[in-house]
Length: 298
Ligand SMILES: Nc1ncnc2c1ncn2[C@@H]1O[C@H](COP(=O)(O)OP(=O)(O)O)[C@@H](O)[C@H]1O
Ligand SMILES: [Mg+2]
Image 1 (cartoon, rainbow, N blue to C red):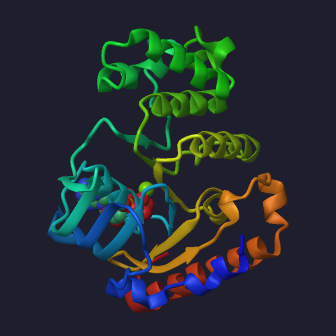
Image 2: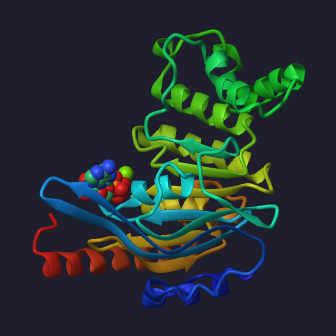
């Protein structure tokens, strides 16, 4: 793999802002074209996102990074079909056809808080999405054996009969991970899914997520984070979102996330160090720009 060539030259810089997204080849899974989102707030409208042009391929893993309040969660809600854009288009492509984006069973969503039902055991929580999404039709046996498979993969078999209040934060996050993978999503959207976890547990989650993703060759993932290390470790495409209203200002590509090395070993790779520096520089430059143009950002 020629990783060097895969790294910085793909930074599309300002071009991504103008929608020159010809960089994507192959089977397209998600497209946003000139998408904008605004909300009615007291005394007027708040423009949150503008001019979002994104093309995401099947099997691509995308990180969206940017400061708090820039519109990352809003972008994810648009892709999930929880909200419609005020202008522009959001499309999810299934079997070569575009479908109007709407909440669907084959879109998995991981929230920052694992959102477990407190009255259900770990296993009941894991089964919940697949049961209601009808992922397995009438094949209950297959669903149960897959539930055991995913619980085993994330190390939860021994905790199957415990309730959420009886397990650690890391175990709750692993429950949510097993639950979402059991639904066999084609698209997995993650909104700072490990943000509430300590550093060590986050590392464990990286290993699990990389393992599960590598076993789902058709899966497309989009992860929102403000953690540069998380983005590089888990995602081959990294988009920086900045400004008020927010827009995608740079796109970086790297082969680092696809490598078999552990997170620790990856961080020692010269490409990693170089990419991290470039991302931080880009984030800081944008932040300063926002400060001087708006005068309000903190
Ligand atoms: N439903 C809403 N109504 C009004 N304002 C909203 C709504 N949702 C989000 N916002 C505002 O949009 C901006 C971006 O929010 P969000 O997408 O949550 O940012 P991020 O996830 O990057 O922190 C924030 O200023 C937030 O207050
Ligand atoms: Mg958010």
